[in-house]
Amino acid sequence: MSLPDGFRFLPGYFDRAQQDALVQAVIEATENAPFYRPAMPRTGQPMSVTMTNFGPLGWITDKEKGYRYERVHPETGATWPEPPDLLTQLWADVADYPAPFEACLVNYYDAQSRLGLHVDWDEAATDAAVVSVSLGDKARFRIGGPTRKGKTHSLVLASGDVVVLGGEARRCYHGVDRIHPGTSTRVPQGGRINLTLRRVTVPG
Ligand code: MD6
Ligand code: FE
Image (cartoon, rainbow, N blue to C red; front, side, top):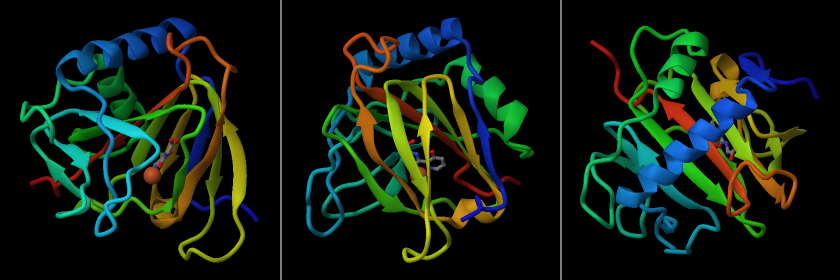
């Protein structure tokens, strides 16, 4: 299978010092916006990743109301922390979009975590790409086509790598099969952090 149009893989986009700065920004952010374990809509099944956000909006989910964007953390009620400048610069560099991102979802993966095949489609601004940053342990990332069936393509994402899902790829199923524990020391406690930058509302 060939990769979908609009898929960009930018290995080693962030150098080591930048990766460390991003990890530090996440650790500092979690003092006020701690990682929490979201629940799937309807079933209430807990996800194996834990999450927090940066930015004016944050992606959250729970049993009752499902997937959505909210201005405040579901457990603390506080607004989400400001994103680090490195992410603002990344968006300006790769998103090719006339407005800033509004949400940066922060996912934390431990040795058991995975993320099932999904399409990010809770944003009104689906014309904007979703930009992702990997930090810490390597992960097996899988991307397929616009339906759940059909061939998929796997690649290993390492710390500092950036993936852009724009164009056709924006509506393609993707997920994380597993991480490879102990393959990086960039996250002090081990594991993997993934940041996804999204424009949520239509600008104007
Ligand atoms: C992850 N990434 O790498 C999960 N979504 O942990 C995503 O779900 C993702 O990498 C949209 C765009 C890029 C991504
Ligand atoms: Fe996604």
